[in-house]
Image: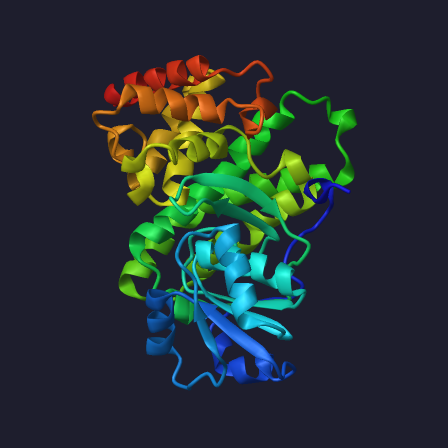
Length: 359
């Protein structure tokens, strides 16, 4: 049984729009035994927005998104019918581990627009020192994901930018794999995932600038709503339909490798992935595509150079270790080049530095 190859489009129920959390009590009413898992900052943001008191036991995760913390929380919580996850990507991925351990339902209220964690059954899991552990393919998908546009106006600007960067990778990472595969070998589901990835690309280019401006104005608009649902919902459907063809390749592999460089820990997941997109394009020698993308990166404040991911004076040994990790057999760079090596990735990084410096 390979969960990574199954068609799993996303949440059992996905509800988005304005005023969604006004009906939270009705959404939670079917569950008699429920526990809340959240982070301190996330829960404060939620309490500032939601006027009522939640009458459920509240537990806090440790910020790592680790299997160990998920299992620890499951032991503390005991038997419940459902877990209510309130927070960002790492909190949500922790709760997926908890829900699987307890074999209970998972309800998600994202407090940030920064990735597809609230929608997909896949989890990015880390060690306690914040270095990357693995991609977890969970049995449980979200029973209910509640996306309230008004509430998500509280998303910090840089997290929203990171969400755009993470979602942009859907097209480039999948295209980097698909270009090597004869069309007649692609299943119907993979083809649907590929079309979805292209539509995501179009929405991002059409609406990102306006959505970021509306976030700054604290204004819900059609563009803001489209970008919210593109980052959270649509991006999750790509891997949900396309499986290993549509989840990750070079950009995410480099992100995972960069977790070995402590200087990059302060850079958000999606922003590092966005940087990885450009490195991947340099790796595949798609230089004209990089030229076309750089104005979009500048306009939307996405990182395009080592300096912009806190590696202005990189520890070369560490950077090489990151590249070797990205090229390792357990990582997804091999999906675009079976003969990938850390040396080739370092060469691509150098090429990108050269291209960016000329702009």
